[in-house]
Amino acid sequence: MDALRRHSLLIILFGSLVVTLAMGLRHGFGLFLEPMSSELGWGRGVFAFALAIQNLLWGLAQPFAGALADRFGAARVVVVGGALYTLGLLCMGLSDSALGMTLSAGVLIGLGLSGTTFSVVLGAVGRAVAPEKRSMAMGIVSAAGSFGQFAMLPGTLGLLEWLGWSAALLAMGVIGALMLPLGALLRDRPAAAAAGDLPLREALDEAAGHCGFWLLCMGFFVCGFQVVFIGVHLPGYLYDNGIAVQVGSTVLALIGLFNIFGTYVAGWLGGRFSKPRLLSGIYLTRAVIITLFLMAPLSPTSTYLFGIAMGLLWLSTVPLTNGIVASVFGVQHLSMLGGIVFLFHQLGSFMGVWLGGFLYDLQGDYDVVWKLAILLGVAAAMLHWWISEAPVQRGARQEVEA
Image 1 (cartoon, one colour):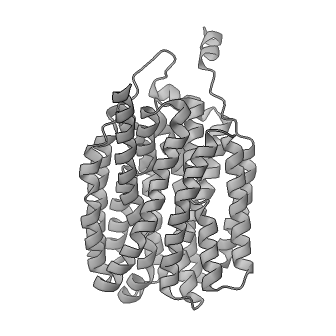
Image 2 (cartoon, one colour; image 1 turned 90 degrees about the vertical axis):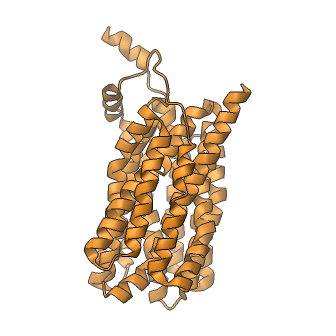
Image 3 (tube, one colour; image 1 turned 180 degrees about the vertical axis):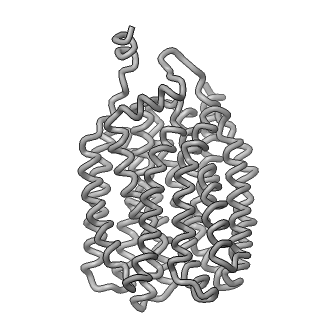
């Protein structure tokens, strides 16, 4: 028992460190939008399109990365993902064209993220801990991503101001290389086949025929739309309205800081209350907070308050969403099924970041996208209200088929 407990703690520790680096480096990309676009003569649409491709490929590759992690363990997947991520950061630092930016920040980093973030790591955690502790453990690892955002954003801004955007990205690539040895230590044990477990194809068919699975996917689309639009475009929005760039960096750091608490508490609450109802409350509260932020006079103070409020809700959806997948379908194919749900998150991310840049270049403001973020939040709250987290009844189904 002690050996199993020690193994679980090591999985949580190394998984948290990998997610801290992967998410911490990623959350600083919004700081590079203005300096890269200005120096290289791009419209904001070029930078936004590259990050949109990043989020899209991250999502498209995630089910495959998850399936590989379910089959062979998370360590190999994280090492390969970390190598692609590191290469993408180095090439991004050397980019001087729209194509180079798309291939580095978009393709390489997008593929790298699919192997180093939540679906792969949380799948390993879900298999390593007892069911009654699963939601809490996922909350801890998800909170690590928030800690990375809080801890690494000031350092990213410091590198940017000290070295300029190109050398700062090269330095970030060196930091990202730490994911390789950490990933090699993430030696989870893929779930062994047991009575009632399904082959991959049947697991996919089962999820495809489950209404709640699709409602969860559509709700996670909204999460991606909101958080990536805000994470990438908020510094530019503030800059356009006369707010210093340091305020944008600080508010993103505040989001990361308070999300540590919000995500941990969400994981704790998910072990005690209905996860779908908690998600409904989170999305509805997000819509209210965005509305109040847009209605209030814009100032550093109102921006900091917005960052604190959004931070409490930022990644709190992650342990709850993955927890529902584990509760309904079990852990054998958790990384793969969680990856499919995450694909919809990234489709939303693609739309949020790309639409923000496209409409800004077209209209000169972000008004339409802010309003969409509010309406989608209300829609997501309604969708999650109808989701059940009761486990699928495979035994009953198999008896009927017999």
